[in-house]
Length: 623
Image (cartoon, rainbow, N blue to C red; front, side, top):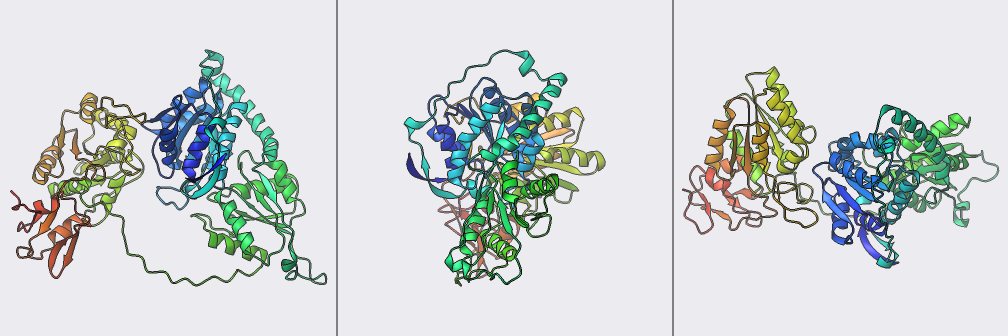
């Protein structure tokens, strides 16, 4: 063993490698992305890694590997679990032979997601066990436990870190390479009675699953990461306790899981004058460690549950009190003692515990912090998506339109002054929404924007649907040659894989033509005049048509050069600022000004200056 300073996601990846993982696949999504990337960086020669086109496909690939006896890891965020739910629910029923760990990173807050759904609840719905780590060290150990558990009980297993676990750093103990498990898959053994899912097999297996999970409620009480922490009050604390003549105080305890256990533990350490309060740590919220929980509840009058996001622990403890006729009062989200939504933090947890235990909060040290600059979310300077949105906006002036957006960097096209995202639901949904609006409002020009990675992940079936059902819509594919929002991962259109192989890139244009589109045009959005004319012509074509705005993300292919403002020529009209919203454009002393630290020289502003006052640095103006 040795020490390493690792991000939680890196710790999970290194734990998977130490467990002998044979295959890792997934789809990028914050806060889960670094797990697969770290495995790809440190994997051995017998470990296969890929970014799959979406989470459903990834789940099916991981399931196939587990059928063959391999140890497989599939990674995603909580939103991706929705996409993967179809094969997951069936895998739960049919089971696995090797170890299958489903890494689902939840995002309380949410910090970078559309929802803050709780995968502990999804695990119970899917009837699969879930491990809920409280920090990087535990996440490293838990994923190894999860593989063993999955193999022993022949079931998929969830590992559910939250953002603070996934993206927090800690110095942790990790195994040396010679300590790694070497896992050799047996291979797929044909057995249609096991691997072909039919109603009769599902009925039989459902009964087995329920019996297994009932058994695991007792088995998991002995899992060492489920525990009760007790500490006797020291002399200093005893001086602050009520004397024997005082009225008896309620016997109180705390229950927590995941990163909230860490908050609860730190809070208890900070509350110096608190009474003894046992702390139940729930590392496996489903199946719930029933025997351990009953031991914890014994002789307690009140329990405060500290968790994110659903009241999973609170409901389980309430259920046990009813089942065993206990008089313990269970408090938490449902009782109004903890917030029903949102991410917890140390200060909020510490206050909740202090109020519950009826003790004073420690005096806070006053810190004078400098005010932070206001940085609203905005497309990067030079981002080709700005040019794409602006071209469509200019081309469709005066027309009745709807602009259906999608999930990615380009969601920021909703910000002023572009204001080009009227709807945004989930990956690929904009295409369906655009189709629906046209069926109801025939006089509306319906646009759907989608990125290149999202096109492969979830848009293709909707294009097929549009063609088949004779919709009227314009698909705009914003092709910046990467999966930019989550850290520039490759996808089928980039011509390279996560294994480092150079492969034939899948052509979006050819895919669209193969589906049946007859009007597919590819244009550089930074050629503003051509882009506008292309939109004007294409949008008025009948049926389903597409424009591929193709220009690389400036974070991976930064243009050379910058632009400058000729102050003498600038008339201070603010058109560049008022219409483009580029963060590199400023206004000072009645003149436009270029922030040279941000400018990439994309030239969009110079093409739209009415007096040609913005020119390429060292150039002679626009043609």
